[in-house]
Length: 501
Image (cartoon, rainbow, N blue to C red; front, side, top):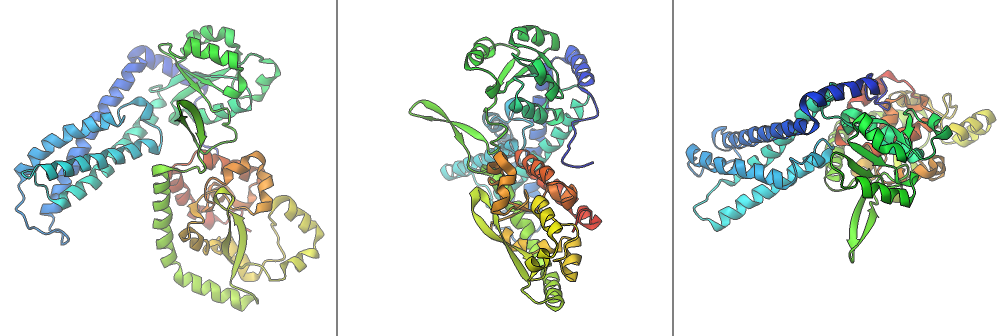
């Protein structure tokens, strides 16, 4: 299966809705979420309690040399403290919105809130110790507790999230939805939301004022126009209305908000109107009481940026150190095989259009342009596809190292220079940007990667249009888990040598 496809499930929409109806009739939609939130509270209680107990073991009982036993630990004293801290922690989680369904099952946002809650909790404990001299806690225990609380709480929620994804196959935690509008933005919204394991939505179809021929452009049916909306909500048990704002008039939009904006049992959600173009994320800010939509300049912000940084430098530093012997061997082989420098510098585009030199091992003869002039048909193919399967410019050593993508090893230097990422979209030269058309602005909101979806989906065997689509899919759907999945798929893809030339 190609990662780029990420099919929602072999289950069709009608079967899924049948399961949803059966589950809802037995348990009710609200009751399912009550059970889920209660499960979260219990899981958090166990995770936080276990974290404090493990911290006590590591600090006082494991005999780790970095901790000084300058105080006599009292299990009873720390147990009494934990009896106070655990309920306080759950209250703090509730205050941070960690039991609000709007913040759950939504990527790294939930984990970032756990990090914030743990940090605030530990800060409150430190403040309590400062103002209460009788409240004495070992600093080592406090630091280890902070780390373990974050790790175990995130781990528990990660596994519970997988339980929910599995339960959605049986119709639990699924909300029937309609998309208002049937233009290109609406189509892209339906494509994204159709992955119901993650979105929690079963998109039944579109509602459009002018069904006509546009119905044929979509996998989902156009079920009717706005005048039929009440009937459709009743017939399909709709819980979510997703408005593609570029597809409706201002008057229709006002009517929708007037009728369904505060209606019980139905959530009305509005897209940005720029979904097919902007992927960096939007936020509403008030300036002198005027709400204005602010567009982020980069795709990753906040804790997402921190996770990406840790992944890049954690892998980049280790991989660079382990690759030193291979660097030396390949450098020597390149010098002995053909005259010229060891490294090739390619001018490419980075975040926000900043250009930089991407390093690669030289795989071509230095007079490659002269060689290519002898083959006009290959020159035309290169202009079309930006790749040649049988490239006469490639040296003997170059052909070998390209087979295993070893020519890209020097890009670890670019990673350490914060110009590239381990995982990301393809790096492109400035002239290639026109191939991305309106998607080009998205490509420049995230650093290019040494590997990516294009790498694990066939490399050079993938058409240029497919590469563009893969890059856009990656940017729009980025999570740290997607990066980790791609990293684990990269090694088999490289060893298979499929599409490597």
